Image (tube, helix red, strand yellow):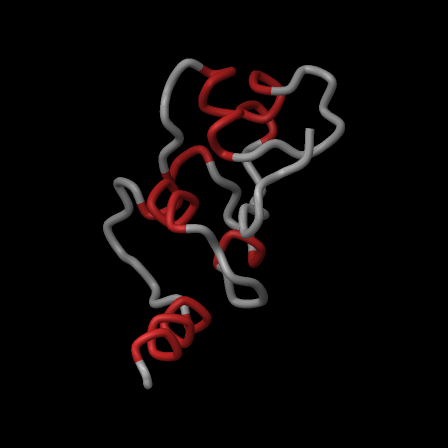
Length: 89
């Protein structure tokens, strides 16, 4: 199964192994959550540049999970750019 558009992320190894024992491949957030039986939160994600979203757009669902329960949030410049581009005439 392939990931949904704009859902490129890295989970901590233990979380990924629980969701995908085969370790290979990519899963969308919904498929990972279904396999885990719970919603993901910020503590499930690795601290890496991929999860910061600086180099690619992120889905609203992914952004919500990565920022869930985080105390400090960094603005995502790509998301800001997309929001500004959508709102301009």
